[in-house]
Image (cartoon, rainbow, N blue to C red; front, side, top):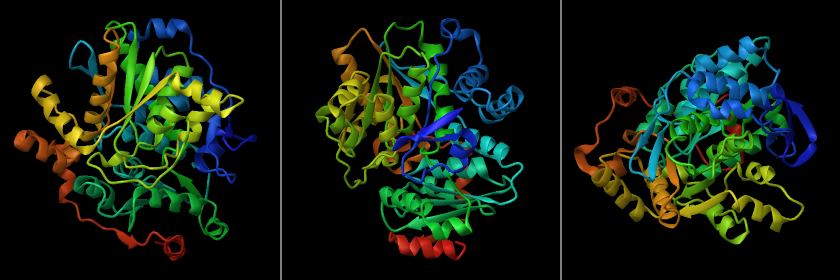
Length: 438
């Protein structure tokens, strides 16, 4: 497998380089040079395969012969060992539940696969690798769980102080050992900017062998494509026109869906649903991409004003002119955005009308599905329920009171002792912290 940088198609590396050194020096993002279509017979008979079998076939299609069949099969089976079920809410709307992993968020798919893949590549390395990761909520906990006590890997998680839920904070600050948490006095975009700058810092590169666990790492995107196939398997007999709605922050999840479509999965449309941080929906509407500071919302994992994966989305649809690229993108993707009041009311309505409890991000996805099917009543929409609602106790209790029951798996995190290092958002402060050994 060969990958190129979105900033320079002549900058080509192999999978190991792209995974271990996730951020090219030219500040682009790695993308596969080619994306092969899967056999039509696989798509036609997909219901005959288990989720793990589907995941292996899709992974092999992307990765090719970079890994032996036995090694790849082992990585997939160790990483993807939980389900992704479809729950039907109505004749027109379903949800794909992605919160059945160890930290009860969709990030478990990417983090566990990436940890297994990195461990494979680092088996013969003598120098420890330091994972730098910025999180707006769920990424940090999933990465911590995936890499906890993995030999030869240390993890430094940056998160915005006071802007993640209490449970999310517990899931990324209570591990100890090879997992360190840095509490940044800023927003997620500040955390993300610090990580990107550190990757390119010559002084730090002498001290650390860096890699990233954010969705800028291609090892995160590959496994996120798996559950679109698993979802389609469960939906294919429901409707001819299948639409996936993705609650979107950094747009890695949506980009993975686009990869699935490029591999031949018959997805009719993608709905990019977000909150007041509506940079991409505005681009889809106007053709102008204008990054802006993020604003806090009750769907905090989507509080991203300059999504990292937007260059990958453009790369998949690149044409000779910006206008043609825009036309190409919006032929597959429709953007929606909703405010906190609408999100709050949607949580209540979903529970009242369908007996289902959706988290704030899923509620945003549900709203987009409603608006879409109002215009396309014969299509079936499925929003991704990206995290268990128990991870967002404040907005959930505000909407549903005591109807929310916390799973034991999440309750267990609340008893741990929070350990974090506080840091300003200025790069010099963060660099000094890293130079001092965190």
